Length: 383
Image (cartoon, rainbow, N blue to C red; front, side, top):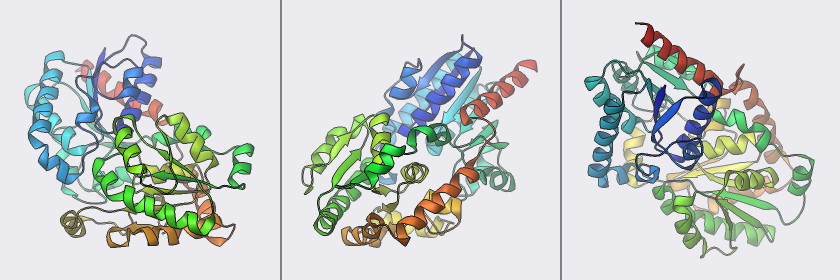
């Protein structure tokens, strides 16, 4: 049995790797092909081309690189049709996944296609749910409220399997020594500016200036900056201008270690904020895009909150500093109370404890996703 998987982001690479590991436990002889990064390679995937060709792009970057991405879409669809896998799992990146699925369905309609990570139609572009129906057999959702939304909007069958971070909670949660370190000086400040180059361009300067302000008001800080190998050089170069040289780390274990001992964090909006919440690290979320991208977003976005912890809790617990509010001074002002033992810090930590119950699943997400995938393959084979 061969499964073809694609991931277009670093988070999707990790998601794909977890699914591959679970599939191997069920079917040791399973083979994989597709597109992924280092995590999926460690599980046995020889990537068709580097994940970095798809990752690290914002909206404007996609427009500039459209011809190259279009070529990769065609090459991916060609490879799937030629290999005729038992199933295709398209992870994250709706635009890329949708175009691949359309091409495969037109040429090889017998191949099951599963979308892993439901497009966030609850945020914007609700028509995507119905548009998926002819091309995807099933959608695997990371958040518990998504299946009902996709059903209401006319999407393909959608099942909540759980967020992959649930499988990492034990590695994220601080132990006694970590909690003790959070109370000692100098405090550890984790800074997570995102994995897209557009995010780095907009946030590295603001975060660096915020670090300067915080170090002036709170004394020495130990600054740790987790990033990814394919943008490490750019992050290190941007960090050279910071008043406190950040310790740049690139492995998951180094990142988790930093989170466990972190007193406070600054993060780009996205999965990083949920990761910090599960690690029980008080933090501030920030994001800034080009003015015209923001104008489009204001017309299309349907939610009132941007950060995942706030959306899950249905309450603005973590400060959100977006667009014109994404300034060094406002970031520093929002982060400053979190260094102190007081209401602002306690309120975030108490709220983060509630997220466990909101996301809880009866089995690990990768196991649930594997069961659904194998069930779809079995049904298709029986026809």
